[in-house]
Length: 312
Image (cartoon, rainbow, N blue to C red; front, side, top):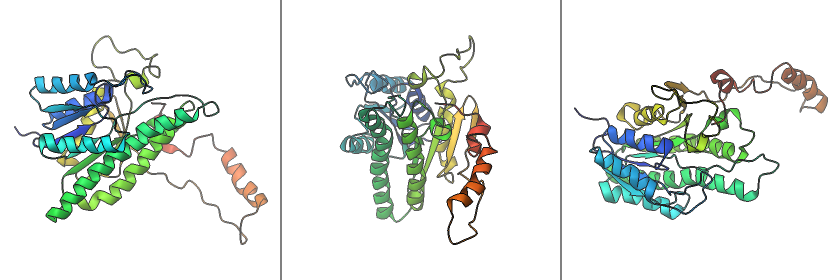
């Protein structure tokens, strides 16, 4: 029986633990050769010495199960090392077909006490890290498409968060980075569509090292699969990486515990027009103050309210 990703090569960043590990295993199960990328730092805040251990362990597990995988321990937030990651996939397996961006760190703090370095570190790993790998992969696919005169097979799955959709008071850096990733996703989807490349983003909810405090009060069940297990997220990534999702691009999907929700782009909730050449303060006060007063905070973020989204 043929597998949907047989003969394809995938990169998964941040794949040494948690979501990335589950995603790498799922892509391998679907037939892909996988480059398992993880910088291997022990702290979820990105501190500690880098280590090859996490990436090597996941790659070895894939190979032991009959799949093909190699480890890569470069820092995706470094532009040159991200380029080396793409080059590794091509050198080891002859092609690059799928890129899953998952690597990230946390430096949680309220906005009024956040240090500049805490802001910069999170933006660097999440947003710049996504850009770096997307940029190198996109350039490779564009070059191939121009050389052959035909579209290529390319799939990008980026990782955003419900922290972007619903806000997260203690994570202004993380929420901003995850919002930026959605912008990068939609922009890249438009730019790469003509080359045959799809670009989508997911907002996963899962129990990982990154979210251990968020879900601390929700104990895993004594039996059966944890509703917050990363294994609930991985099948969606596998689908988006597959030929079946050829016409799915520029989308944002929330996924957890056997549920997938497609998030609509923001819609206009109300429109107000000035009765003169331009608005006056009094006119805006009359139009807007009452309108907002009649609505609870956050009502205009309909998707977040309907889904009951929380920090994650």
